[in-house]
Amino acid sequence: MANVGNKRSVILGVVGLLLVAFGAVLVFLVPVIMKQQVEKNVRIDPSSGFAYEMWRDLPVPFYMSMYIFEVMNPKEVLLGEKPRLEERGPYVYRERKQKVNITFHDNSTVSFVETRTFQFDPEKSAGREEDYLVVPNILLMVSAQMSKDLSFAVKILLNAAYVMYDQKAFMNRTVKEILWGYSDPFLDLINTLLPGKLPFKGKFGLFADFNNSNTGIFTVNTGVEDISKVQMVDTWNGLTEVV
Ligand SMILES: *[C@@H]1O[C@H](CO)[C@@H](O)[C@H](O)[C@H]1NC(C)=O
Ligand SMILES: *[C@@H]1O[C@H](CO)[C@@H](O)[C@H](O)[C@H]1NC(C)=O
Ligand SMILES: *[C@@H]1O[C@H](CO)[C@@H](O)[C@H](O)[C@H]1NC(C)=O
Ligand SMILES: *[C@@H]1O[C@H](CO)[C@@H](O)[C@H](O)[C@H]1NC(C)=O
Image 1 (cartoon, rainbow, N blue to C red):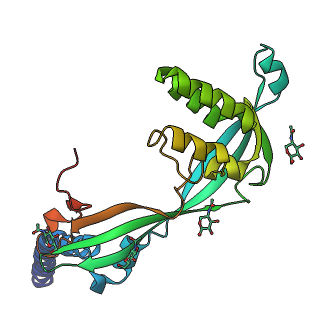
Image 2 (cartoon, rainbow, N blue to C red):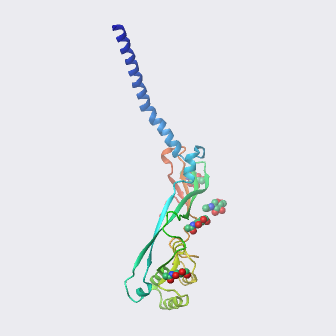
Image 3 (cartoon, helix red, strand yellow):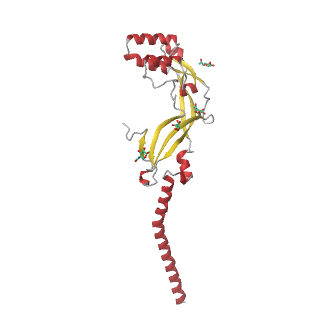
């Protein structure tokens, strides 16, 4: 009986030791494995497959929800009444960011351009892009603001242009036009009269030129040689510093 008891305690002891050893191995090995896995998935390396695809074209959608306030009493506002506003929307856009023109360099850096595109999401939206809304004519407001420090002659010209181009204090435009821009001969005139003052060229709108735009050329560290440097920006549009 004593013999069996001894045997049992020896076995238990051995099992215990093995567990301790196994635990110790795990304690030391798990971080190593984890680190390797993390590094493998964080590094920008085309051979990493899935992780690289994620980096290149993030499948997680970004949503941009826009609310627009419609002016319900434009005529009365012009006569001095307080504006009555009603909220419209959300008009929801799905943003997709995609890296293109990806070039790997010898010094473990990679250059790319990130483009963004926006797609209207009718299911998540309350309303359609084609909805007409009456909103303040921002172009008119901006040009009036800009003309404050201009010469008398230019002011006269602008005032004539308001009449000529039928610029009213409020405009009736579609959601798509308000957000993504509309062309207006008045905009061309302002750009001629006040060159370089407006950051809008062909179209005027909150997000004109936003769709299919890109953020410039980034060069970032791939982390292949030194994981601590991964994603560190080396240059942006060839600049090492942004001032
Ligand atoms: C990608 O590179 C091509 C060829 O150099 C160029 O024509 C294109 O404009 C680039 N794309 C972007 C988004 O910069
Ligand atoms: C790596 O190489 C690229 C392309 O030759 C260059 O633009 C970049 O400045 C280099 N970066 C470093 C840290 O040497
Ligand atoms: C953005 O551009 C894409 C591709 O050209 C187009 O399909 C999409 O409708 C545009 N989005 C908006 C909000 O205009
Ligand atoms: C805005 O214009 C559309 C299309 O011309 C028209 O159907 C709608 O009644 C107008 N809305 C207002 C408030 O004038």
